Image (cartoon, rainbow, N blue to C red; front, side, top):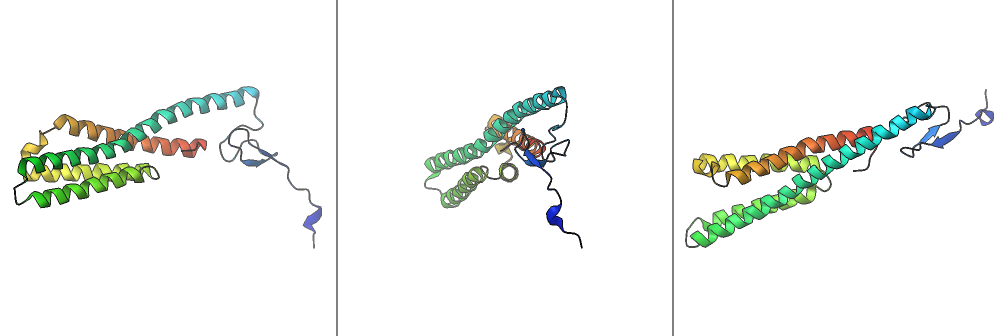
Length: 181
C-alpha cells in the first residue's frame, strides 16, 4: 500500500485576471483562460480583449438598467392613466373595476422593477410579455387604443426589447470573463 503523505503537493498560485487558485503547472486559467505561461504579447492581448469586453459589458449593462427603469415607467403611466380615467368618469359604474385593474397592473410592474435588480432577464421578459398582453387585450376591446399614445408604446417596447437583448449579452460576458454583474 502506497502512502500519499510523501507525494509532493502541486504548488498553486492565483490567476492575475480572475484571482482563482490555479496550479503552477497549468498553461491557462481554467476559470477565465488567462495565459498563465503565455508570452508577454499573449498576456497583453488577453488584457486588451478583456478591456474591450468590459466596455461592451458596461454599455449593455446600462441598457439593461434602462429597460428595468422602463418597468417603473409603465407603472407610473398606468397610474396616471387610471387617475385621468377616474377624473373623467368618477360617476361611472365601471370605475371600481378599472381602478382595481390599474392598481394590480401598477403593483405588478413595480414588483417587476424590484425583481429586475436580482433577475433582470426574467423580469424584463415577463414585463414585456405582460405589457404586450395588456395592449393586445385593450386593442381587442377597442381598436382605437392601438393609436393612442402610439409613440410611447413603441418607445416602451423598444426599450424592453433592447433590454432583453442586452441582458442576454451581459449574462454571456459575465460567464465568459468572470465579470461581476
